[in-house]
Image (tube, rainbow, N blue to C red; front, side, top):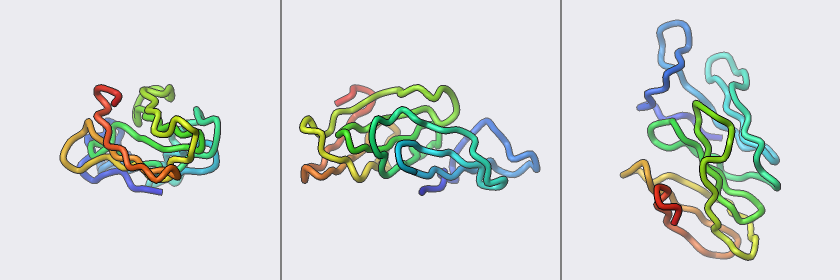
Length: 128
């Protein structure tokens, strides 16, 4: 699980004037986005055909990504549609992608690592 970055400019508020925070949990074939304060599920991402791994927030909190047993890295909007924004094919032979992280310097790059012993650096704006 991972906390939403504190620099998030999320449009939803926690009601008490405090900063809205979320918790992202990877569970079986889905990602669950919880409200940090109420502990209730705000959103579910269920577009995984196999086990999801390593759910992570982009540093602005507006996008989430996760790897899967099918060799794909999937990206979703954290505050809008549940549809997949982009799929990146990390492993053509379908090996599991166990770790996904957005880079600290930019909102358009992420790194994925998998059971195929490869580390890939992605520019998500280009899909490569």
